[in-house]
Amino acid sequence: MNAEIENLAKLQAVELERTRLTQAARALPAEVAQTEAALTAAEQRSAATSCALMREEELRNRLEREAAQHRQKAARYRAQQDSVTTPAQAEAIEHEVRFAESEIERIENEEFASLERTETQEAAMSAARAHVEELAQTLDRTRERIALQQKEMATEQAALETEREILRKLIEPELLARFDRIALSRGTGLARAENQQCPGCRMGVRPQVWNQLRDGQLLTCDSCGRLLYWDPAFAAAPKAPQLETPATGDGHAIRRPNTAGS
Image 1 (cartoon, rainbow, N blue to C red):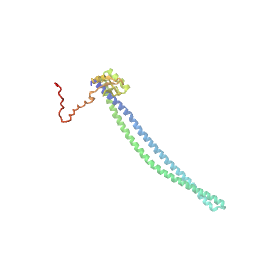
Image 2: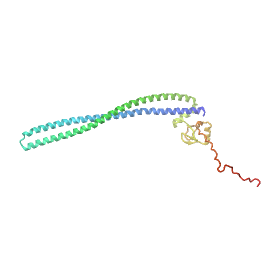
Image 3: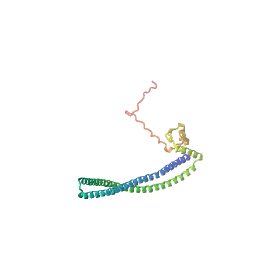
Image 4: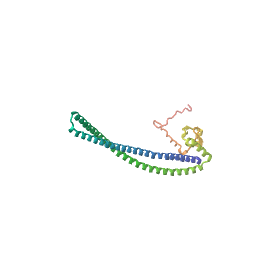
């Protein structure tokens, strides 16, 4: 393989690696954003649980005030029972006492249900806070790792850029322009022919072209337009010669009849 083709192959390898690093670098911020989104969602769940706990506490305070009011009413009506003068008054007072007591019972049941909800929410709150703390630590580690990766990638990109400029100066300008033009439209400008095929488009090459490639020429694929070359270093190893199978029988050669002179 001549030096021009070798430099083109090296240049393409550098370009592909630069593209890979660029794409990898672009994906890194998304990883941070994903972790940040998870942390934000966890913080929102924690805040919602905290608000629910506050609502339950406010509910119990209100219920307690209502229960106290009904207890006062019940006590006041009981005190009036000793001074009633008619059965109708006694029945009315008894009705008010029963109503107050039923309301107290209802409120106490609501308070008990609120306490049960609070117990569940407190457990959820504890888990939510632990999850937030865990995600916050994960985000810190992720940011540190991403920053390190970005720094390493920047160093690799700088080295590749230097190598790229050196290789481009070693390639004939017209050939380099063809390579750039093809790479811009096809993604790659060069393809190493294998098994009488262009690996870029998987189309076969004509026997004459294949022979020219094997002679070290740089040609153009009739199908995709990529620059084709052949590298003997990647040629398939020749098959091992097959040993002849020994004749069966007693090992003696079969004599043919001599027909001469007969």
